[in-house]
Image (cartoon, rainbow, N blue to C red; front, side, top):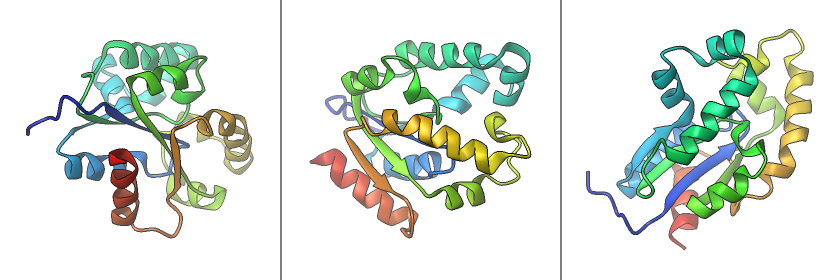
Length: 173
């Protein structure tokens, strides 16, 4: 795979279940870039799952691992990076991501998010009987951060291919 080193990275942010990883893989393929899922990369580096990191070391430790990865865990160009849902909410993170590349936020409705994430054991912030309320609160808290992206795009009522085409157009403009 040939990487265009003159193109900055593309960071996909947004709430869990909005399609960042699914869409990100396809965008990377279309652009001829590498795809990186930060959560998967952290699991590999830590040699444990995200839920295990949360349970054993806490959310603050996980957020530090995310920050460290953004600072030095990936190439400076030629990558599409799927960010965890809470990464963009760390102090100064949106500005850091914007300096490193283009930031696109993916959106979906509460109902779609709940449908896409139901039954997932890999999402520690949703593993409770009050996931509907938790999703609403988390999304409300995170929206001001997500709104700072260079561009935003809903994944509602669109195919993966349609979302990919929109993101590639935004990135290339």
